[in-house]
Image (cartoon, rainbow, N blue to C red; front, side, top):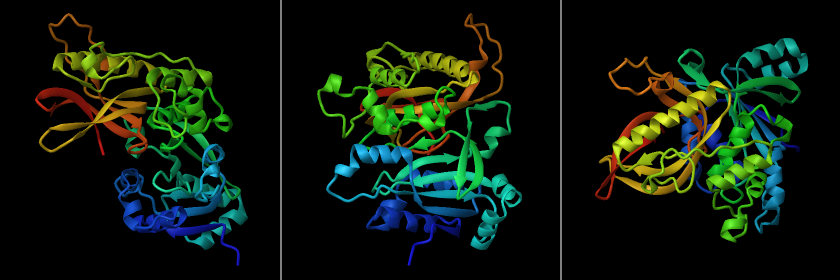
Length: 379
């Protein structure tokens, strides 16, 4: 008996976890349920935010980007990975399979209700651990309700068994640690948010990694990828037709810039405040021009006693900001800019999820005996 092409379920975390386990052949439930990115998505889709009610699972979905990565690496693996993904569509209204089938048969009039309640989709790749593929979900509802918030979002067309749907967002793709690292994922989101590349010509993560010529400096093979440096990231963007500017926000070697990128920590509060102002000015200018940015720097784990441990380098794609109240004039000779009132950033972070928030309130921590200042990505 042939397997059904799709299934319709009430949206529940346990149902989605069970499906992912089956698709990725994960042995234990905790291998899926403990995944940080999935926990973020559960909060994102919960009652307090997108409030998903129903999901339609498209069991066999050909994902262009995974297929390219598959042909580049997975097809040569000893373990037999499938080339077919699945796609989970989310809706904010309740309906049963019979109602969905009737909508597919009746056409545009019935489809209108599904369009009005469509939240987007999540592609599930048939590989362990990094199974979250292209994720295209509506932004947090409150982001569109306040003139002090500005985000970038593009209209994405979706075909669900002939039902034409749209979702206004920017897709996110979790890094596949074999063919890409966080920089490749951030570049992919930036290209997705750009008006300069047609959706049909979006490159895969492996293509972005290869375009950076990652072997030149290290002398190692491209796959598995160990990440891209800022210069390599800029080279990859140039390959796809974009000119990049690397803006070092501080020249102090102790801030972790290492030749370019945006620092998220500094060893003195004054240095950090100055870097933060310059960062805000650049983000305000580019986002208002619908141009996304890449934000890179050192990342740390922050403990309850404000001690931190260095984890490595990380990069995210900046897609928006939130302004606070107008700053009051002071006796200072420094120019007062509206950009300096930015309180939060909204970023696509493959280690968390879409439109993750970064508080721009400097946080003091200690690393050994040395104090440092940084920014916190909200979980």
